[in-house]
Length: 360
Image (cartoon, rainbow, N blue to C red; front, top):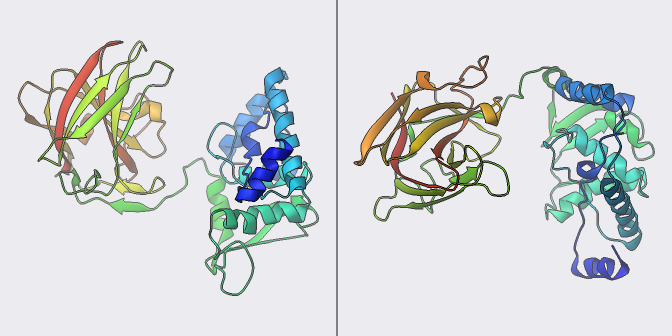
């Protein structure tokens, strides 16, 4: 960050959200005792495993990047650029919830006072998002309040001493939440009961009947597979899929049909016997169920075939298997239905698909 860039950011009202926790070297990362106590059991286990290994040296480029990021933060604060709080929580070592508090604390290690760091996490971040109804304690504001012991505006560690929480003016019972945090179970999420249709032509603007947008995914790597799909003209409930396979030993391409509009909401398919659809093709195909709490590499799956003419395929839920023998398919915790095309490295595969639905 040089002076010219800082002046341009100020002139254009550009804010900076550094996500320092994402880039903080984890090889020698230390936790405050109260911070350690707030980690979930799986998170502490990960950190214990790291600490049990011989100390690892931080690669030179990683250490240099961290030094530059910290200096950038100091210069931006001194230059008057707005700095907000964000974490990209969920990636390795960047833990949900606690990483946001750690992000606030890291600001105080790079020139911000505790009061400035709290402001960055509240009113400044709300302003960056143009949400002027929150982020401050004032009449007319949304009453999202975190009450803590001590003086976090003077001693940022007091932010961990949570006493009461209000969301939209309603107090949240903390003890049940704390029990959930100490549990090995995934957090409970809102659940939507499904009516049956997934994509039978009732959606608009390329969406499924559930109001969701199909997504293409594939195996990781540089030379990975690519999937292209189009809705067949005059038949909105039908897809034509074309996959160009990558160089991986077992390449694949997925068409993902999310079952709820919210990525943190779940779908309940209890009461149905399985999934039905129409298909035509000559390749190798699989159907997978993305289920909450099950590793994406171990999704429940089953193979299916398609012939030269369109036919209906019906797959009972009992035919789905996970590579994790201990996993059990919970139809009340579904996230997505995944259609997978498999093939040879460098090859091509096609599939026509339509009228995808759960059946009784």
